[in-house]
View 1 (spheres, one colour):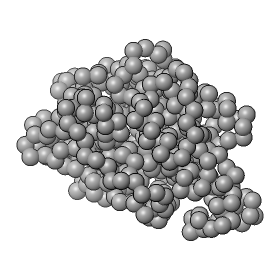
View 2: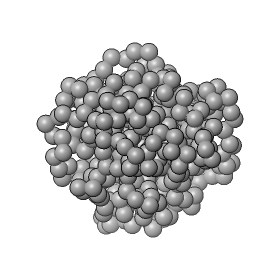
View 3: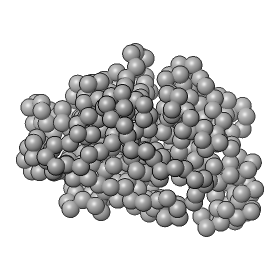
View 4: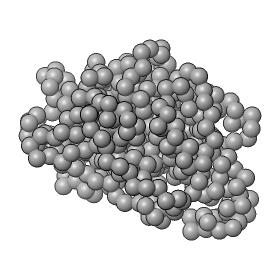
Length: 401
C-alpha cells in the first residue's frame, strides 16, 4: 500500500517544540554526550553502489546502526541518553545548581541516581538502551516486556541488571502497564512513544537519534534526494525527517515512512489524517516495528515532514535481510535484523513499482538514504531467516562512560 501525504499540516513548519527538540543545538548536545562514552564510534555509512546500478539510481547509502555503542541498534542513542539527561536534571534540582555531564560519576550525582528507578516497555532494543543507561549512572531499571519479545532479547536486557517484568499481550499493552505501575511506584517512565500529557521524555529519546543523521550528512558526498525510514510508533522516522527538514530546508529530500503491512499504524494514521489505533492481528516478523498506536509527537512531526507512507510485507523484510547478507556486484555485506532493512525494502519496492516511482520522482539521478536500524539483535532468528550465523559481538566487560 502507498499514499502521498494529504494532511492539512503537510509542508507546514515544524511545531516550535519539535524544532527545538530536533534542531542543531540539541543535536550538538547529543554529540557532546556521546563524546564521553568510552565505546562510542561513528557508525559506518555503506555505499551500495552495485545495488544502485542494478535498480537504476545514482546512489544508495545505508547507515549501519548494528554497530552502535555495543547494543546493535539505533535505540542505543535514545534511551540511555534520556536516562543520563534525567539524572543530571534531578541532581541539579536536588543540589540547587546546574550539574554538568562531567560530574556524572561524582559521589553527589551517584547518590541521587541510586534513588531513581527508570522504567519502560520494549520490543527489545529500547529496553536494552534504557537498562544500559541506568547501569551507567547507577540507577535502577524496570523493563516491561510483552509475550512477543524473544528470550534472547529479554536476556540481553537483563544482563544490564534490570528488573524484567512480563506483560501479557502486545507492545501497546506493555506500554500501558508500564505507565500504570510506574505512576503507582513513583518510577520515571522513559518511553519511546508519547501520549497526551507525556511528551518531553519521548522527545529526549528522539533527540538522541539526531546523532545518526548528523553523522550521515557528514559522511555522504552529497545530501540525499530520497529517504526511506521504517516506523514502529514513529520515533526514528520523525527524528530523521524532522532533523533533515531543519538542516536542509528547501533542499530536504523526499521522505517516505515505511510500515509493516501487519502493523501499519502510521500508514493508517496518515490515511485517516489523525492518530488512530489499529487492531492487533497476525504478528509480523518485523518485531521491533510491531506497534498498533503511533506516538503523538512523532505524528505531529511526520504530518508536516513526511511526503509519503507505504507498507512492506513479510517476504520483503526477510528478503532484504538475505539480500544484504549476500550482496551483489561487490557491495559490502551487512548484517540486518528482522526490522533493520525495512527502509531499504521499501525503497526497492517503490523503485520496482512504476506508479510509486513516478509519484516519488525517483529516476537515474536519485540518491537514496536508508538506515539499518538493527543488526542481529536476535541471533537465533537471524540464523533461521538467512541460514547464516551473525558475527559474534565483542564480549561485554562492564560499565562504560
